[in-house]
Length: 412
Length: 148
Image (cartoon, rainbow over the protein chains, first blue to last red):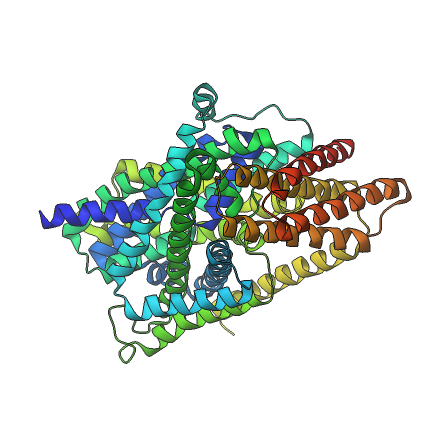
């Protein structure tokens, strides 16, 4: 009964923690610009994150090795260090975007100065990580992030075109007005896939498995949590795309602020819908900010061989605890410079694609290694999917920066 | 120097060069005069702000949002529209695009003004603002289409 409850809570947490500011922005705007045509990318990306999260969780459970230990072992020190720098830069940018997003949401709820609200958000995040256990953080932010389910209700209420949505599940290239729009479609395809397969999710998931004391007996629970929780989480992203296609597209609105996206649930359910959307976004962004700050500290500690873990006291792992505090502080200081959080997230997501191959190759190699994993090594399905996705993310990594330039940062 | 160490330094130098090239490209592009694509993007952004403001005004009039949300969301959109307006005012462009730059800048000014009225005006002003923002949305959309 206890393990069933653990799995159930794990599924809800995985679901509630699936969407963050990047996915919100890209999913809604993909719906606005290309209606349901990019739905197949949501499916492709969700299968991809399932494949690699399952592998990283399995490797962590069997060997007790988190992703950055594998990166150092398998990529070597030089490439590993570059991956570390790039991964932590992306996590920092994502943390900037989430803290900026939190300040925007606080402003919508209570009003006040944006910069003061960013400091309040910083203090709240520091207090949450300092005082709450790892499991409590996961559960509180994951569960309250489920308020975002109001977008699923709104998507259904606002009447999506089911036939168009069904066609969008098949990989397609839509009829568009100009050649530039084809590049924009490719840019959104790459960005949407990256927003689902963000590398920090895998780093955090594997480190979290070790924080939770997983061993080989948790392999089936790992599969269940991922196979059920992630597709349900992806439903939220699909709902955001539906809201973009059926509600914002006809009104020529391209939501560039979280508050604009919240107008879809408000149209469906009035003030209650609006409030649920904002509360859901608040905990989803807050959870993602914490995950990114901890991920930065995990990566650094694992690569450099420091003591790490939220379960360790600051006295036992001082450098680890200092690292996540610094991640938050540097991110908040960056927000204070006045950068637009939504623009930051767009860049962080595109740069994240570039490091995806360096992140996923060591996981794939370790999970396929019989000497390392014994009877828990990749089966034929995981091996085929793993290599197919590796080729796909390599192509996406090569295309990401040129597409960013050609499309003027996704503006067209 | 060992091969491993040499490879690391080569990779590090390549990374630094890439970052420097990106920063240089960004600086050059931000100093260059606006071309047709840049102007189209600015018009598209302003159209999106106008449409978002219009939707917000309509939903507030219908009682679907709280007043705190309405006022603060308006302020956030207004900040973006004002920033776009001031960047257009400072912008230079080719002679053949000057007329359109002037028209878009004028529309941006009107948009900032309407959003300011929404932000500071009475609750009843929302319905009137929705009409003005609807007109601005369509005018900016026309400008955007002309630049395609």
